[in-house]
Length: 198
Image (tube, rainbow, N blue to C red; front, top):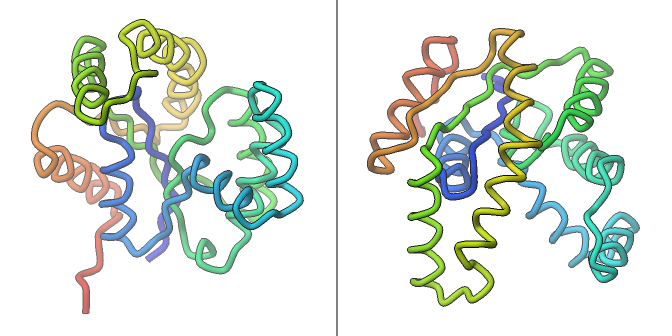
């Protein structure tokens, strides 16, 4: 079955892990902007070279280029029957870009999985992860800054999708399996079910 999904959540909400689980269960590719950027950079594509020069200059990749990279990835054969977006759109401008692209294909998102995790929980998870992985750049201050950007720029996209009636708020606190079960219960209520592996 086709499913066009978006997973959203603050850093430390577990959206990367949950996204992979959902994608595998539904047989759709997970399109993570970070992964797509890295693949383009590694392959030395024209988009990859543009991304590299921007990042090397210490700048953020502009919305237009981010959208172009995602459009290119969604145009690949494995995404024709569905996809799960992770990390895009991350602001209102990118929502418009995605809308235009999907409308051009006479498609729309089926559901937005919004992982809800209290700020304190995100902070403690990220601080613990930084300690485990020895990530010196993940200071409490840096983590708080990233969470602030999410709250200011990304959280408002949920209002847009909320008015379309496609947002499923999922309690992101609990074990991995508990959160996964909540996601699938919400998707099943929309008629999106995982096909058992044959």
